[in-house]
Length: 472
Image (cartoon, rainbow, N blue to C red):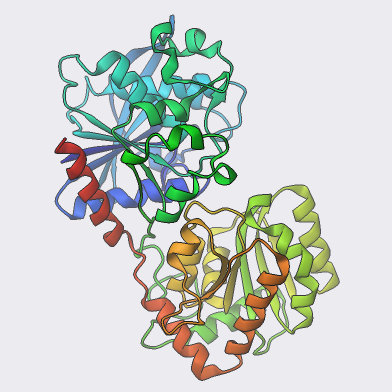
């Protein structure tokens, strides 16, 4: 099969979160199983000159944005066994950052239309276009409205993946004619609650809808998680499926990770102690055998930072150290700054995102705290287990699907159910109790490291989904 991933970001070219990891990794594993998976993203100004030098110009065309005709350049590059295509328009994409601009709707309307127009001019006809999140949600809409019966476009299927349902592409009704160029008799595909909702359009027109974990697939049928889209999703359950994300085991490998102080594996975890010692020294924390809890996250409400704030000092008082890496809302950044100043030998806080330091935290911490209010999938808990750092998580979304509580015989972490600070504190206390029994703890570390959350297993599930779509 020929599969085209359409997304707003992909490593190593442009990244702001987990979406880029998925789009930059999963195609490699699909290709390894005998298929041909390519990727198309915008040609952002932030893409480095080093990566731009590897690109080849294909052609320039014009793309309709409602009544306008806009320049579109098409470039290609080959990276990590994947063919990438890039949609170029400096007015839309040569900016400082990927999102958050006043005209994001117009930018991605252009991109979605350009992806479909590009197919006329490249030597690649997809059997399936796999679209990711609201930025590409108009591709299945445009395909069904304009392209489905055109020569060369027949038989293409569309799959749409929800990475985070909170971000839907909601705009006023005026964009329907002014930007999208969708006829009024097709307006019902996109209208929802008095707005134009791009994600709703994908739900209506895609052949399959997927989410990034099985639990998230049924959670978003509930108004608590769905951000109002539950009413449309309950009518689309027949084409909704949750598939757990994976991580790239070539990138996250404690046996050959050049950024960490010592190598180790599930069979020999002795090198992890060296990583812990080096981490404490680098961050200026007191050396010692006390448990170290790592936090690598965005500082936003749904990541559970409020729970951490409630009991943070109580956890520190238990003799536990913290290493924190992240950025986000000022109220949370200020809180962690204050804790670092108050407990300088026990709490380290680094604001921002430093990839090398994140690897060192995954390898050097003993536990990884992730008490999310909602988590479509989450990759950090999988990465931490890969490095033998035991996750402490709330049972939601992909956290529920990947972490089993150590109260059972096959546990690989510690979990709690309700969004409650005392329940989280109880999970931390249970983790500390097991940490103090080195025989129990080392067995737990090895079980966590032996869990298979590579893309190889997830790729098999996607391929079965693609085969199912093509058979209809």
